[in-house]
Image (cartoon, rainbow over all chains, first blue to last red; front, side, top):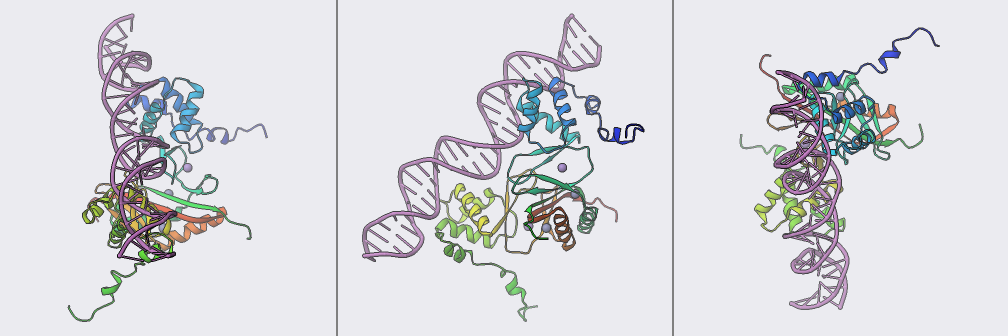
Length: 152
Length: 152
DNA sequence: AGGCCAGTTGCAAACGATTTGCATTTGCAA
DNA sequence: TTGCAAATGCAAATCGTTTGCAACTGGCCT
Ligand SMILES: [Mn+2]
Ligand SMILES: [Mn+2]
Ligand SMILES: [Zn+2]
Ligand SMILES: [Zn+2]
């Protein structure tokens, strides 16, 4: 089980673009707060809100401000590095835009966010937009539900 | 083109439940502000936000307050009389819950809201939730796009 | 018809999330 | 190194929505 470095060695971490460099060539300065937030982004595999990202950032650099988190998230969003979600109820949540496209099912009892993807649905959406004479820029599909009660 | 009162004469206005009565039997008082807002609701076939509803209400009764609009919309939402949407960007928008279920395509250039319905998509959503072991309470599907540019 | 009183209102202040003005700091090109 | 536009932290502002509270009704009960 040790030898033969299979492609997972890389692909687990891979997938990731080098935002630091991308930012740079986008004519944006690599500041300390941005380094910190980019690091957090890299190991982000959930859907934290600004306050949560702020907390994670403060753990690394005491002096970071919430305003900068907001500013940076907006920047990263424009850069396509993160996606912003507005699930029912709470504040906006962000997620690393690295992975493949997917939609979400939110557990109304626990708040847990479950990801799923349906190529058929994506296709149907396209088809509908086509028929209406539209090009889809992006879409949002959220299912809100609760764990099926027993039986079956 | 005049004779033969086809069923549209009715169905255009029909569909509507009598919320005034429903409210009453729900042990809620029929106040002047509520009458006004219910009237507005009845002829509402778009997706206005609270401020817009407030404006329409003021046209009828000068003394209505925005707070009451919010309170009443919440009430009507709980009653199932209206649906609340949170399209990207703007404030919450409401719509009469009378019609059949549908989802929305928002024109990013004009803000126009286009309604559509896909039984296939609805079915697939169910199926996905099933597989994940969930019962869907409700869902939200929004397509954001722009009118297809020329050709075809 | 009149009264009672909990439900409802208008108002303004409070709220939570996000943005912004500004003086100060800092990245980084020259 | 220095210079300076870009970025930051802070606090105040903004936006949509909610809420406390005193004044005001709707509608059941005499
Ligand atoms: Mn996700
Ligand atoms: Mn609609
Ligand atoms: Zn999707
Ligand atoms: Zn639907």
